[in-house]
Amino acid sequence: MSIVFIIFLACIILYCIHSAREVDNYNKSQYRKITKNSFWDVEFDKGKNGEYKIYKSLFHYEMDGASFLFNCYLPMENKETTEIDAIMIHHSGIYVFESKNYGGWIFGNERNAWWTQSLLGEGYSAQKERFYNPVWQNRTHIKYLRKKLGLFDGKIYSVIVFSDRCEFKDVTIFSDDVILTQQFQLAASIQKYTNKTIFNQEKINKYYDLLYPYTQLTEEQKQEHIKNLQERMNLRRLQQNKVCPRCGSKLVLRVAKKGALAGHEFYGCSNYPKCRYTENKQ
Image (cartoon, rainbow, N blue to C red; front, top):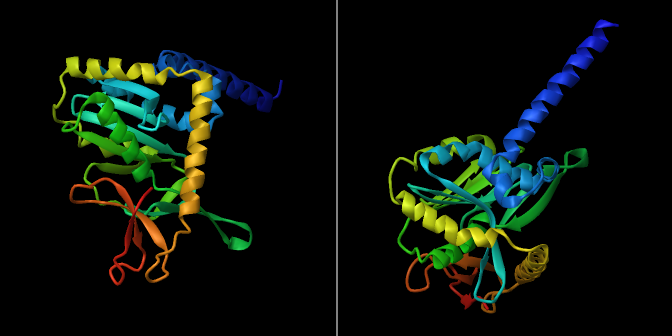
């Protein structure tokens, strides 16, 4: 028996032992309990894998009394749903996670409706793809989470988690309650927020029990959610082409920061401040 074959066989055995441990740990996890996804489903699905990695980075908070929820479909006013990738309810607050499995260079601004992913293509040309602002996306999630919990003064953090395959090239965040990070930095990124107490264990359990049923939708309900989401995204892309009737510049989707309409989306002229035309979002 050659030494090369022995080394190969040893590697196979070690891999099998490692995989068995990984599967065993996964099957005991809260993620498995709630999602009911198999280990191999998660291994080969980027979206599910990103959610599980969030849990793996933070599951030690369970020893501190934290509870986790995944794929939480909350109702909106129009009888549609909005899906939260992951939630951690902790004594320091509620952390709402939006997982983004993008590679390449990432460009974005919290105040702009669309961000850009830039990938290196053939001949060193950049292939650019636009995607909806994940901060705004998570803001919608948090809006309906607050409504469901009746929690309008408690601390809720918006955590946007990108994969380790990307690089932030020009990303600007203004809000103190928005945490933008990559997977490998997630635990360190939220650690500084977890040293205070806002909720006791009774409150954590109450919020968990209230939200858990929204993680247990049927496959038919999930497919309906996907259909409605695609329709909303198509509408948003069509609205990118809106033009200012005063100066002819492009209208861009923005979010009001002050006044009675704070938090509401509206269209503003891209030629601001020279042109101050605004239009309500329908």
